[in-house]
Length: 374
Image (cartoon, rainbow, N blue to C red; front, side, top):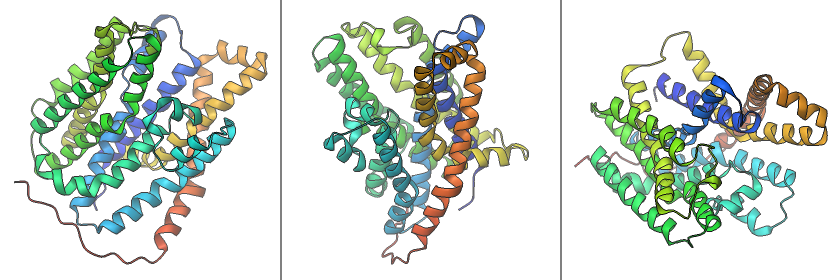
């Protein structure tokens, strides 16, 4: 299968945004001046994880459309993601002193994203991997049943239905700040909500495979991208959902819209990057390929660096004061050290383990064939 430089670029954009946004929230939440406005925009345009979902939908559909045997598909996907996911669950569970057997079971079975209170007890970032694994399980069936419906109008209609359904869920919660905040955090992690981003990626694959032109991609992407900070300015200028007045229906629906927009901006960015060959120069390709290669491990382990710096600053007030007085240097150290940790994990754990698992002899029966578009 031909490697697309644009996909490497997009994966690099996604992981860098996630790492920078998490670092900015940790090290410079109240930075003054122009720098503070830049950081605010970085956090407000929360598209890193949704972009990963769009790319996953694209890549999974591309694999299934190539005729890969279903058993080979499952073996490759699980060998790629699940062993390191389990290791991360064990590491973060141990570091955070998790003793609840139910929390362990839900994480190890990748079902913990049904409750934000459960997923945050282990580590706040592992919920997205539960969404990915659940999508892998459903992908062959969805490919057969829904490929012919992967068109912008169909996905837009689905997005509206999903928005209405989750709005009903949010407004059905008790009209208190605590209950609606918990419900909103749950929706953000639900597979039923994030499936739209994954299917947008599948739709993007079909558009590319059939040479479809999305003439409205640029204006739609810009509107979605600009609407995110605008909603934040109006509803949560502090960028903290718990500080919005969630007893008001308008605030709840505005925040639901806020978390609905990133997949729209992401799929438009992905389409334009692939269609117009953005960032495809020879000097950029190896950089994008390297960042894309370590992106999974970088995502898995960057919270480990955040956790370590937080505990170090808590135990040593002098270190904490030093980091607070030098936020940009602290952010740089966190980015570099987490990237190094991601590369080491990729080089010495993920890649050899993946190769070993795939080297085990398996028999695949039956091929998937690309269904007709109808």
